[in-house]
Length: 395
Image (cartoon, rainbow, N blue to C red; front, side, top):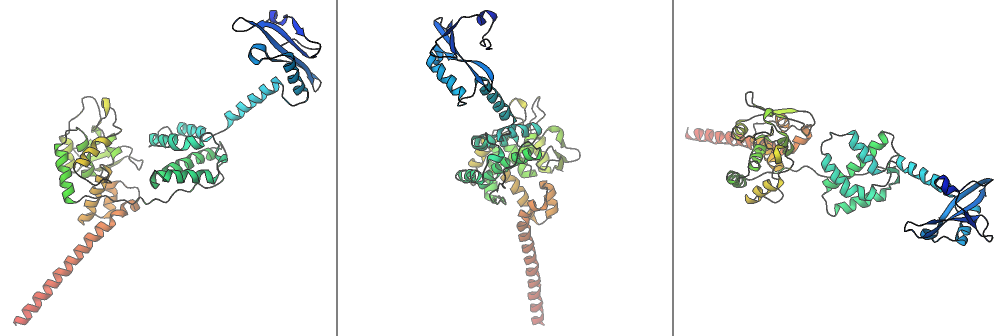
């Protein structure tokens, strides 16, 4: 026995059914459209695997539905060419459920951030993901990737970005995929993501003339923090981020130490507060409410000062490739290494390098100083030899 059409309310269930003998299994009910005009809702009835099915075929106002069109839909259902409305709804529900269960690259990135809320450099990684990874791979699962996809991305990025930046982008993609496989959220990519070769051994230095010009410009500059930060990098070798996070409570004037909170190595460390840095900080103005030595807008932690230190660098006529803050950290290390008075182990501790390999880039400066000292010894001995010969001849 056929059931009643799936309509709302008991009153609607009693609506008269209009049929046409030429189209068995099809009928419509009279109604009105959203605009108030007369309308028809067509239904079809058929059996599938012995089970009676009755479902809506469409409206004359929305679908231009007619008896003939509804009959064709009924025929396709009977022949198995189209799924029933219920079967389609179930398939759509299953597809949505499957989609929800899929861990795409974008979904893995969201899960990765939730699992690592305090990870350093997250803002930079987010920019790398938004600009370079998500547009190409965001909707794909790791197992959907093929080597050609990643290789094409690498080659396109290298057209405009440095090898170091491209390496960081691909490393982030690899990190996201490794997170997913480690936590059994997805299958891996099935191949190894190769990172471009990068030579990060870059040591920046300034000539005495360049240093003199820089110090003169800093003295005249009116920015409350830019020049002071550049001097502190030169006096202490501190990184930019370490200076951004630096608070007055981190300066131990009595014992002569600076505490570095959350440095690049991950563990809080201390470095000496030398006389030059002490004098600089002693004369540096304090914000009325902010705990930071170099506060940003509203007294909050500073996040950028590139514009102002670049202006000072350009006014001093420094090389275009010289990095205004990080370059001065290199100058600090170079001065100590070339002095001949600081061994590489001590320099490593002052620079808060995690491994001696990072300090090794300055070894040639110390070696050159040692060679000069050795040559001086040779010259002294030669002079003594010449003097001894003269004494012998006089005799």
